[in-house]
Image 1 (tube, rainbow, N blue to C red):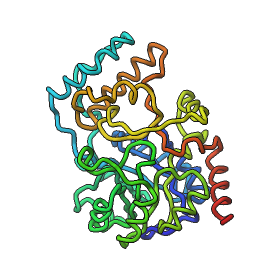
Image 2: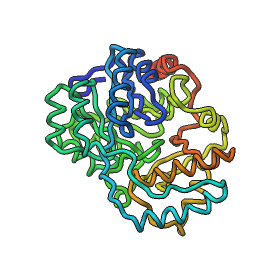
Image 3: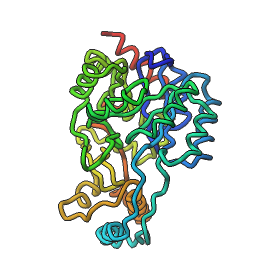
Length: 349
C-alpha cells in the first residue's frame, strides 16, 4: 500500500484509538507489515513525546501519529451548569460528586504549536488528522518535513477539503465505525453515510487515495473495500481484543456477549458523536429531555466523572466502551497473529 511517499507491505492501518491503542500494539502491527498507529489527541506534549519515542524503540518500521483538530471548546457557564444539573441525579444514585465546572481537559491540535513542533522534531512517517484540519501553514510545514498526511472524512464535502489542502490520502469513515466520528462540524453534519457508499463516492469523485474505515473486521471486508476503490483499510475494533491493547477486563468481556452485542452512536458522553456498546449512557442519559450539551471535550469531563462514580460504587453501567458495528467478529489474538490471519484471508480472494 502506497500513500504519498509512504509504503507498507499490507493494506492495513490499525486505527489510532485513544485510550486503547498503545506503542506495543502499534509496533506489533507495523512489524507485521501493516501500519500501526498511536493517538495523542488527548495527551500532553510530554506524554506524546514519550509515546512516540517508545514506539520508535519497539519498531524501526513506519507508524502513524493521530491528532485531534476539533474546533476549540467555547466556555458557556450557563450551558455547562445546565448539563451538570441534568446529570446530577445519576451522580446522586452512586453517592458521587459531579464536577464543580467543566473545562476542556486538553487543547485542540489547531491551537497547540508545541504539539506541532514535537511532530516536526520527531517526524513520524505519517500524521493523521481527526475532527477537521489545522491551518494550511501548519499542513505545509508538516509536508515540507517529509511527513505523509491523511485526514478523516465522513462525507464528500470534507473529502474535497482534505484534497484541496494538499494531503496525501483520505480516511473515509462510515457511520459503522467505533469510537468518535471524525465529522468536522458535529450537530450540523452528524455522520450519516455508511462505509460502502462513502468509500465509493470519494473514490469516484476525488483524486486522492482512499482508506476505508468502519465495520471492517476480516480479510473479506478488506477485499470488499478495495473493490469499491479503496487502496486499503483502517481497522480499530478488530484490534481491541489483542493483548497489546490497553482495553481493561470489563471492556474485553463485552465482546463475549454474542449474539446480543449492540452498538449505537451518542454525543452525550463527550459532546461529539461516537459509537460504542450500549449501556445507560444511551438508555437513560441520551433522551429528548436532555439539556444542551457543552462543547467537546468539556462535556467529556462530566462523562468521565460519572463513569468513575459508578465504578466506585461497583457498577459498570456508565463505562465508556467504544466499538463498531462489526464487534461480534472481533478475535482475541496477538496483533501479529491477527495480521497474519487478515493477510491470509485477503489473499484467498
